[in-house]
Image (cartoon, rainbow, N blue to C red; front, side, top):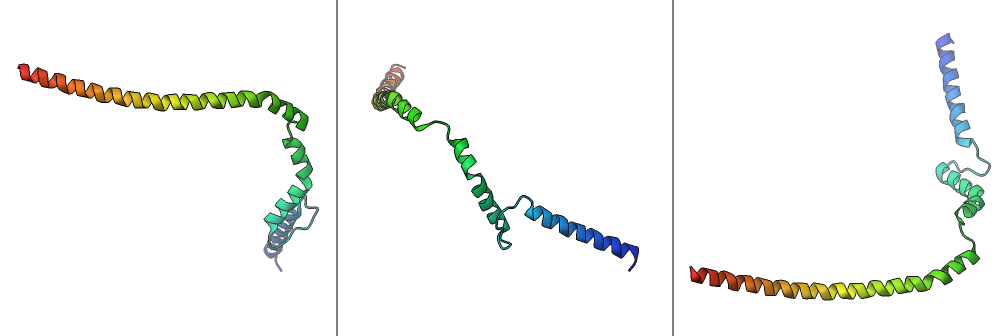
Length: 118
């Protein structure tokens, strides 16, 4: 075995050891070799679930209840106002369409009278 073959074998062994280390780095549970990514994600979520729940729990239930009690009547009033505005908008669109039709009719009459005088 010459020096080049020895160096090549050592490099291949180092690469394999690095890949095995990288694969099992930080792993504390069962990692399935058939589905390594999914099992690592499952393991991560199992380990971090409690911290994730605490992180996303921004408001306690009593504070949420008081917020709902204070704001729900205001929100319902705003929703009622929005419904009224939508009804007004639809009525105004109908009125506007009617006015535009009347304006078109008047413009056509003026155009006929103007062409008749000439």
